[in-house]
Image 1: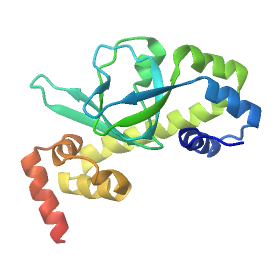
Image 2: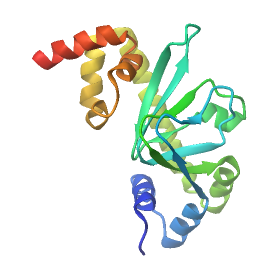
Image 3: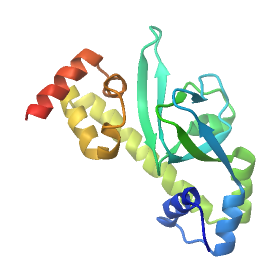
Image 4: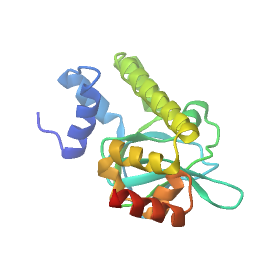
Amino acid sequence: MYYKESHTLILNNIARFIDLTELEKQKYLSLLTEIKVKKKAFLMQANDVTKYEYFITKGCLKVYTLDEDGAQHISMFAVEGYWTGDMASFMTKEPTRYFIKATEHSELLGISRTNYHLLFQEIPKFEKFYRILYQRSLISYIQRANQGMSLTAEERYIEFKKKYPKIVNRITQKDLAGYIGITPEFMSKIISKVNRM
């Protein structure tokens, strides 16, 4: 069976945890919506209710909140092969606190809340897939919170470079500073210092 590139990418992501028959693959793909987001455009803004769980097939997006001074606090960057969204808003239909903005022209596959529940009825093994996905997401969140408390800004930057080598050169220094939790000026000094090491 021939699949377009975006479909191959998401099916390969799923195949890490569950096996699907050809029929199940076709059914799953039929439940997805293709979404395009231009660079600097929002996929989602604070106070929206999250309508989809998103899988990125092309591009880069940042997920962040704003503090009372308007400073961005970036919780993650999502590139090809990553899932993103606000799981809490998606599940509860409560407004999100997050903004998701494209830093590059991006293409995504989204599954709506209705199709998400239909998926579990039609192909129950997806419950296992999403359980693993959410567990890994929670582990990543806990590790990031622990790093924020126990590592210096320089150590957080080194860890980010090590863990996300494909992302570090695709984001601005300002966005990287928003992720590390420091000013862009301090970020610049850390990058210079680490590059000299």
